[in-house]
Image (cartoon, rainbow, N blue to C red; front, top):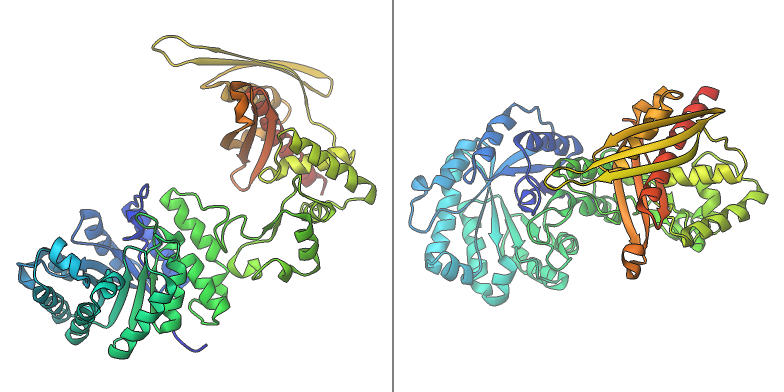
Length: 524
């Protein structure tokens, strides 16, 4: 398909309105560079009339050597009772020196009379005055018709008057916004097609996700003829978010055959999604399409068996096209195919006699509360033990933790551990800010005498899941630990009715795994 589609990213403005997200100026500049590198066409940097940080952004962004993207400053039409030259918002857009001004205006008569408290005629004049003022100051103007689809539904004649006024005033893009996010794809398509018959200015779509349809509405609008799609990375935005560009971009490239960023950049899609998520301090859902860790994960044995024969049986695209990878999960639902695939992924060639025994042991342990989907290090250790190929680096003889709580003071936890390394018995004590931390420190204190390289690893995440909550405080718990050496991260698991024992087992496995991998490197 030869059609060109413009990608307009508003993560730094609309996306930052999501609850829990607050980008620093440095964050915004880093994201700008990343979006430009990826091939985004327009980056909406913020609303310079609303806060000092965005004013500073538009000053700082001038010094970035952008190669692909053009920067847009966001604002609104003039206030009802001000002339354009008196309006601080319009003047802030001009002072931003951004090449593009994206302004929104009212296309729903309800908003004109109830929110702006002005006349329908004055609203039309506000649109015209604002666009002409910005154009007179050398800016390209994109006009966002706010609430357009709701306005068209209730008063189509007036909604059309607003965007025709924007066209006559010289807007270079007219963007139809489903601001409340309640429209259905069929209605979006019908309206876009009708607008396209009467408006010659290139159209865009700005969809919100309140009905879980922002991506679908954006794509159906593309089919109906829009040239610009606005959205955010990972769908960030207030309420339920905006159209997710991370889903829209591969759909355009791989489903419609439209080149928007190109195949090489598309391979960095997951990297982009995680980069922005990290700066937003948000986790990407594991099941997020295309880039989530579970997007191409296969758990059922029948599925894995088919995927091994032909990936197309259960995958809509090759995961590598978007920078992701196929993942086979080993669990109580697994069969031989899962285990064989996972073992090969770990670099282990299983013999026929081992497979059945390992599968049965995995199912038994998962029945007892273990869970290996996020604990591949524990799975690899289990396989090696059952194959008789693993020699432990240490043995825990006993451990004890005492926590003392004093009124008005922080609690103190002290751990004692006794471990054996070869024939030597070591007894150590350590204090921590909690029982798990104290055990971790005591264990490290004992083992670094023999394995000083353990100083390089640290626990980076710790999660506890209660199993069988109907038993209350007597329920079994599962502890998942993530450990890192600064270069890679691995997961281990422990399960017990005692949270301390479950935690200790997961921590010991994380150390065992690291030592096993270090030994393998030395042997090569």
